[in-house]
Image 1 (cartoon, protein in one colour):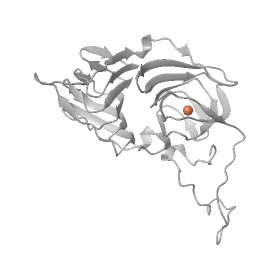
Image 2 (cartoon, rainbow, N blue to C red; image 1 turned 180 degrees about the vertical axis):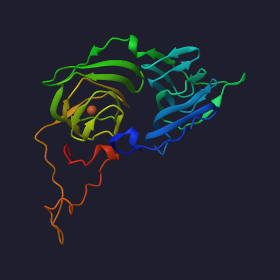
Image 3 (cartoon, rainbow, N blue to C red; image 1 turned 90 degrees about the vertical axis):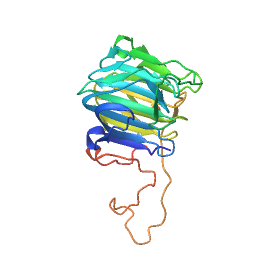
Amino acid sequence: MRAHVELIHENDYIFHAGELPFGEGRILERRLSTDEEDGSSSLSLHATADWGRSAGIAHADTEFYVVEGSLIYGGRELGAGGYIQVPKGVPMDWIKIREGSRILHWREYGDAGFDPLTSVTETDATGDVTVVDATTMEWTEATSVGPLTPLYIKLLHRDPKTGFYTRLIRAKKGWTDHRLAHHPCYEEFYTLGGRMAYNFGDIDEGTYCFRPAGVKHGHFIAETDIDWIIRSDGELTNWYTTSEWVKWGGHPENYDEHNHAHQPVISTLPVRSRSRGEWSGDGM
Ligand SMILES: [Fe+2]
């Protein structure tokens, strides 16, 4: 189970030593979201020196996305926009991250476990390794429902069995939606550039959200062109709410129900980091 994180800026978070077994060099991680039940994690890696790891098998579906700098996978160098996906159990080639690079790293349905390849390694896992350079891909118009200008996507990876996908999404300046949406799968974003205001706060480069299934979100206004990398654990169908209301509360025995400082908070208050400020409750 992952907590609802909405909204944090990664610069508000501390660094930990990168938990990447059998790696050599120096790399730090900021833990954007973790699942302490199965080890799934969304991490921002900062290489404070060259870092590398030999070929092996990861215990989780594994992804890397280059935000800044350079990552070499099995001899192929990827700059900003480079992306790799390796299914759990499928052998992964050697990897090297250059000093100063910033890399987003995800592990899904497993922990940081890693088994170096040996001459006798065998695996039953099947699936293809995906290596793409998003800068060479074209933006395609996404289908949408309602009175919207389009969003644009670059699909980086989709699991054919589960529908789990990772994609880049671009909203053009002025893109707006007054409705609140929710969907049956989780949705996670990391903002690569641009600005948008919405119900949970202000989005700018380096902001991050992990939104569990069913959480409403919207009232979007793109103040500039804005780019995200977005992941979902299934096919994403938007269900919309308009004219929203919340029936919540009770009789205040000994406090002022109209005094904001006295009001109890809703128990599903999301994780927020300091630079995002107060949340008005818009969108509940
Ligand atoms: Fe959504």
